[in-house]
Amino acid sequence: MPIGRLPRLQPLRLVLRSWPWGLLVLALVAVRLSKGAVLSDAYALLSRPFWPGTAQREWLQSGTGLELLTRQAHLEQDNRRLRMLLDLQRANPDKLTAAVISREPEGWWQQLVLGSGQAQGIGPGDAVVGPGGLIGRVASVTPTTARVTLLTDRTSRVGVWVGRTKRHGLLTGLGTSRPQLVFLEKDPQVRPGDLVVTSPASTLVPPGLSVGVLQAVDDKAVPAPTAVVQLSAPVGAIDWVQVLVTSPASRQAP
Image (cartoon, rainbow, N blue to C red):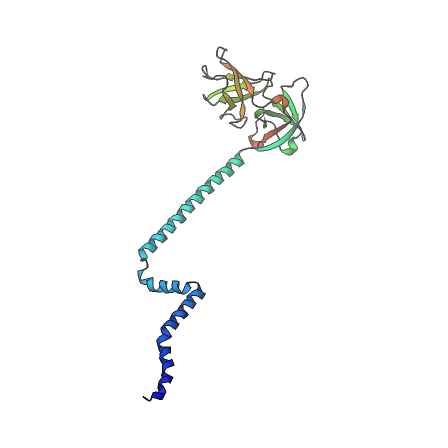
């Protein structure tokens, strides 16, 4: 080869020797610009033969299916619970708030008059509760008023029971601030301080309404033991009450 051509071949040789470094630089620039995406794709491509088999995929799909079944069962359970609550709400009477507008001058512990009546859906036999518990039942109504017979009235009779001993009795008014509870059993096994609620077997008022507390028990009373009940609702100082409005078909005359 002529000596004059050697200087022309040297740059070509330098290029041929440095091309791997150029490719490396280009690769680093590409990784830099792609923020590692090129390496991730390359790793995924190269490692594909070593990926988990179909068995683990089936396990994952089975686990997903089990999760969906569990969620479905949970949703069905919530649906049943909400339906029960809705049915219970429909079965229970609506509560209507009413103001006490007057009382009987000669029968402070017997009756009171409400400022709501038949036009608001109140009817005879509806239970009336105050802050603390049951206070009486609606005796009569007009389009705009309702007369309530209190538990303390001499004509009042409501079935109750003592939850601790599960003993039934009849709460009767005495015309004073405290009615009397006449037990149906000879040995009620009760004591002062026991809570009194409306009887689960009562057809006149909703069951489980708070009534009061036994204040004194007379085991020697004839023909059955009796007890004095301190009402949980302050009958003599109530200005607003709630009437448990029931459907006309389920009302019973007091």
